[in-house]
Amino acid sequence: MRRAPTWKQSRGFRHPAQVISAGFGTAVLVGTVLLSLPAATRSGQRAPLVDALFTATSAVCVTGLVTVDTGTYWSGFGQLVVLLLIQAGGLGIMTLATLLTVLLSRRLGLRARFLAQAETKSLSLTNVRGVVRKIVLFSLISEAIVAVVLAVRFATAYGEPFGAAAYHGVFHAISAFNNAGFSTNADSLVGYVTDPWISLTVTAAVILGGLGFPVVFELARTWRRPALWSVMTRLTVTLTAVLLVLGTLVLVLAEFTNPRTLGPLNGPQKLLAAFFAATMTRTAGFNSLDISAMRPESLLASDVLMFVGGGSASTAGGIKVTTFGLLAFVLWSEMRGETHVHVGNRRVPPSNQRQALAVALLSVGVVVTATFALVAMTSYGLEQVLFEVISAFATVGLSTGITGSLPPEADLLLVVLMFAGRIGPLTLASALALRDRTRRFELPEERTIVG
Image (cartoon, rainbow, N blue to C red; front, side, top):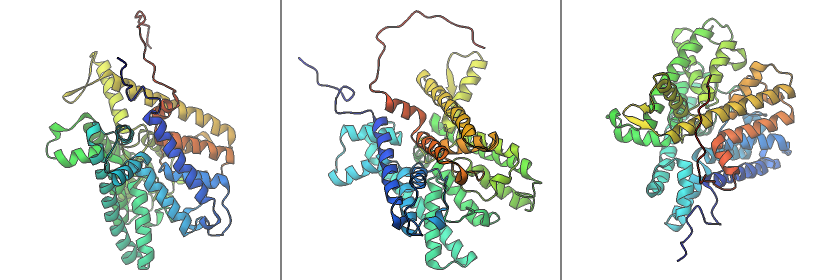
């Protein structure tokens, strides 16, 4: 009797990574077409194709790098397109598609469940529908609260008309929660560097969006019982706090006397500005200080923070704090001569360790290769180019100011980096694979010298 084909064997099924890649690619294509329309620019002329493609990719991949100023170049329609692309990219194309399926058909098939699971990192296929609903509801409520706070502050403290304050509040709220970093201001949030209402509200939205939906949901259930936290939640919460504190201290020490950054500010203002800057390197892209005026040690620290990024299954980019933390525990276990890797009271399987190593090494390879290419394409120094490459690949959006002056071929390279960084190196690699291959035999084992 012939067996029915499984989901892996079905000819009509594609690996979820392929569909996710295609979904993000389609969103970029649609965004590029819309931003290429004359109505998308304030001048009424068509935007150059490279600028439209770059902006659409940056929005969908929630990066924030721009070749043209968002507030002055794009019209109201163009800014609305950018905002919708940010929202779609933040929630995830597959998450939105799954929600639409639920609303229209009231039922979720196995194929749709696998696709949604791959995007939301849900641990069980049975709860995907509930997870997607929670993600959308949580995102919209969070963005609404942040938008109200920002809008009230813009209107009361800076005298903006109610309509303009509300628009700017909504735009920055969506951009902050989705870790996008797009701003309607030419200087981002430099004008609010000493304003704790604006700075702390934006950082709260960035941190919340960068924790990852599974972590947020788990914390909501078990925040009083840390002993019950999963390995992912332990790593995410702990390393997020550690990196924020260390990043703030490093930036305070490095920029304390810099007259072009923290120098003119008083003590509390220095701490606020440094904390904001350290938070934004976790893939948010806003800046309240002039990045190009920072000292080399600050740029290097920012490179590290950007590369690590935020939490898994979040709106943040980078290799993720869970990957970084897991590799740290692997190193610690190896130094102690232990055969297994333990995080708290849990043992991490070897497959997880290999995945973390693959993501980290592949990411390093991409960054090094892209940096080499960009140095060859431009006249900028390694310091600026490396910062730009990591910012693009980690979907951060911070820049030393060179993005708008790069040649078209360099812009296209950054487009590829942003796309690869958003869907993940491992996801991109698996999406290109035609089929899964299972080794039917094992070769003899032989150890080699390491180091």
